[in-house]
Length: 88
Image (cartoon, rainbow, N blue to C red):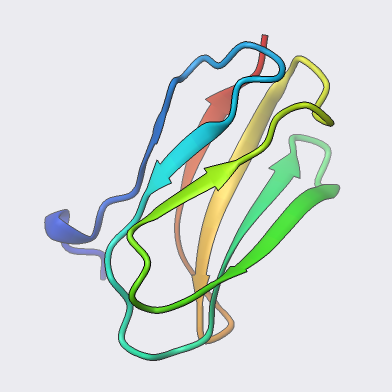
């Protein structure tokens, strides 16, 4: 169950190609965490390990094609939440 206070967000959305996206995420509970970016065809195009005490993550977009992506927060190997981002 995902509580309202654990929501992730991303800005800007949509983002211009080359503009980093800043993900705001909840503080973790000392479990291993990562953010992954997946294209709509299921290919993982970016992944970053993050510390449990981090609440903002900058994700580069310079290598991403201008389409929609799914950004997913994973904690302890379990997908906690996802959001869709458009790159123009």
